[in-house]
Image (cartoon, rainbow, N blue to C red):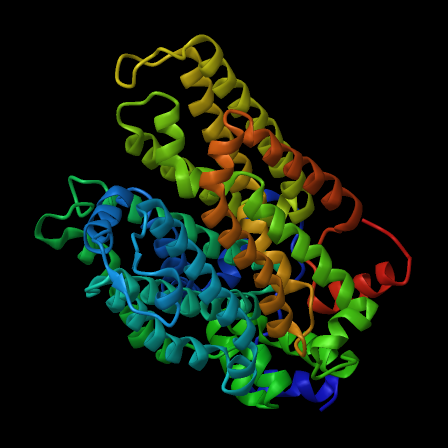
Length: 525
């Protein structure tokens, strides 16, 4: 099918001509957004986000506030003397085993990350075989199983197994979910729709922290913590029973399965009838110019036009996680306790509110300001914030070492809290939303899912490293630990400035052409 036949196909579905190119005025941009942000696109995006970003964000943050409750429940069971019969008993004698609470906490984070690592690796095969939509629908089996294993666990081993399974479901979900969102979005608002993903993550981290305070579900009384970990069954159920009724990815239908009429119908529902023709022309152009339908793992490192965007996004995703925000998200309660607060969980919740509000603001600006600029602003703010947190903690140690928790807030406490909020702001305007968008928009259809799966490996490795190692790291280097993260943010700023180019408003064909130019040494920003 050539371009003329593609136009004829779209005309047979709808006779209306494509919308004229808008002027750059604010009024025209709002009209442009309203034209393509259809109810079906919004509803499909919400269904995708609930079962992927929402599920991931909830299980990422749920263990933060009720940490003492979870630890005490399992510690009471696992720290009894247990005689371990093993082959080495005759040599070393009888062993007594006790699992320390902080190790359980760190291990819970590590296994969640390991599960996500595995899920990201395997996500590409079903996504390319049965499609993005049905991969997410079936993934809810794992999502429900992981939540119920934690909620109904009778031992910490079953709880940790549930963390692994929920991580596995999250790995598949966030890999396929962000690709699905990118493929159903018009180029003009791809950033806006992609930011829904980050909004789902931070929104459900915030919800998990609200529900995790002792006055709600973060308690051992009436098994409140069990309900806390099992609530994501609702998110999985919402996606399971809604997503089948929404359109499949038009890009996957057109480019993978050659279902052109089904792709056109999906575009009509998602983008509106007036935008079908131009979208079909873009898809046909990509189909005719694509150089690879399928790629191997070796191709991502052998071919310059695949290696370049992979390594750039790998670096951005890794820096996103270890430049400081996870220290706030994972261990905000502990960090604020070190600042002398009597109610650190309240400040943790304030950080969540702050993240949500800024993410909503960025959603409306990401397609006008641009991805690269937002990353530079974000990493710069994160670097400065980490420095200020370190200064606050150093002053606390140097001048207020005898200050007791609950006896009043000090100036270093104020600096530490304000800097943590500023760090969250830097994350929310740059690395947070942009990293979900950039990975899925810089590859054409053939390698897209596998590439995003590889990029997500950086996400899970860094989550696991921060979750498992940060408590010891923070204690060992206290009060100077955050200065190391400031250095990471500074390196990330330089990395983005040198290697990343702007992709806002560009089609996949335009982006991949620019990548080939840069891979061949023709540099432009």
